[in-house]
Image 1 (cartoon, rainbow, N blue to C red):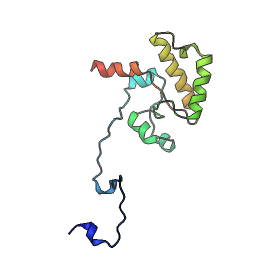
Image 2 (image 1 turned 120 degrees about the horizontal axis):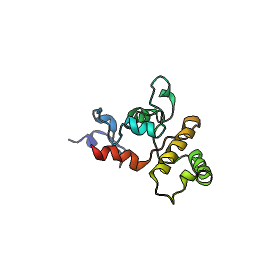
Image 3 (image 1 turned 60 degrees about the vertical axis):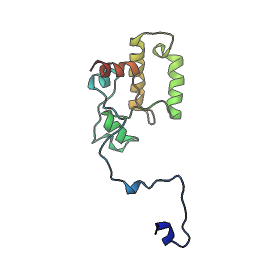
Image 4 (image 1 turned 180 degrees about the horizontal axis):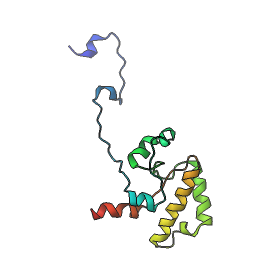
Length: 135
């Protein structure tokens, strides 16, 4: 006899999986701890559980080891900041292939992130990947 046969008029919910039926894992998939040298070179502060626990995305920031989470541009405040910096700061001009310019751009962005709500850290992607590729 199936469970379906035990109920008079069962409601079927399609496309939903009850996550409570699984054992919780301590694995973190897809979250990388930012190496200290990369964090420092991009002007990001280290995660401090006594201070940073109440901010948005604090779990992600904790796993990344940074004061604020590293996320793609996604808030209206970040979009406005990007529009401002792209017109006022030469480090945000994308016609240059200089690694120094994009590193300075990440530092400039992260200064704003430290002081503005809903602006999160950014990292220069090839600078971040280089230590991982060299291991």
